[in-house]
Length: 429
Picture 1 (cartoon, rainbow, N blue to C red):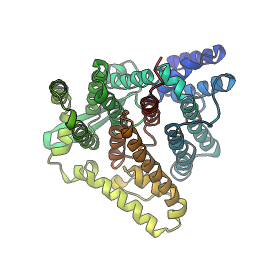
Picture 2 (tube, rainbow, N blue to C red):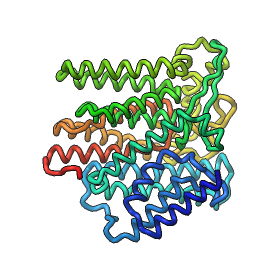
Picture 3 (cartoon, helix red, strand yellow):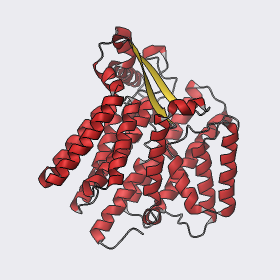
Picture 4 (cartoon, rainbow, N blue to C red):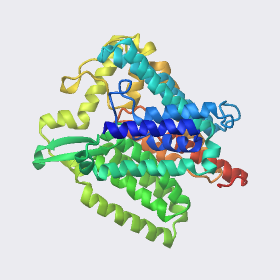
């Protein structure tokens, strides 16, 4: 696969030479969740296609005089989205990378600087996307790129075994359930993260397409709802299964007053399709939810092991009061499976433990602003952010994930729709 990797590098260099800004933006968004394609440890200790596409987009943007580069005159959706990116990519992720590299991996200075640089490049590319988002939305680049990126994630799950046979890097997770005498294979395909992170990513995109479906029931939107649902089943995530139930309850409540015969039959059709998908692919989730597991499996796989991790990290903070201000300053304690707790399987605990209480409150304030901004959307009858938002905050209760790659972009997409509704002037090209 190294041959294909270098072909992609040559392709991105050609984009820089020809200054194809729109295409570089398009590819950056598509590759955001696809960091597992062609990862290579040959070039600068592992530059993924996300890193390469981010660097390409930044170089082309800085050399293009027509590309907006300042953060003046942004709408509140763009500002909130940029704050989300600054928190994760320019502040918290870099703090976490430093501590992880120093305390767990015992990495040298060069490796730490390189990891921070790669992370910061993605953040800078994100910010340039957000600053120029109105143009990218009007030219339909953001919507199409999100759709294609999500579809590639799904296809890489669907054809995981075929891709592995061809030599591609595909994420899988095997889990033995002794009560059923079987091994469940959980899949995340090319997604840049484990199976739970992939499920968290898909449910946010699912929420976005559900908000589109709520306003206009187009066949293409229904198709992507099915794609996201099927992909989530491949991951076998229990937390996402509960989040889907909560989102559907919200959807029914929000639409109960305008329920028609047409929407009723549409809901029956989608429910039937989703049921058959669940029937053929949902056994991983049901096995993990309802199995009568052994004590060892309960300790490793069930939710109880997450609570043990949370309790261990919080006890470590109480024993070291300085952690409340500065976050963790030594090697994290040992948790379940006799491993150092790097991932507590709770994003809020992770931010508090590694970032400190000030950074934690800043993080919670961002969530509060997102919740408030949804009330603005409701006043203009725009597309709601609540389905994606609920999907994210619920899955983050049981997962540790750096950032949902498409959530900031979905936020500005829905924000642009909101201003289009309120001004009744802006139209998509």
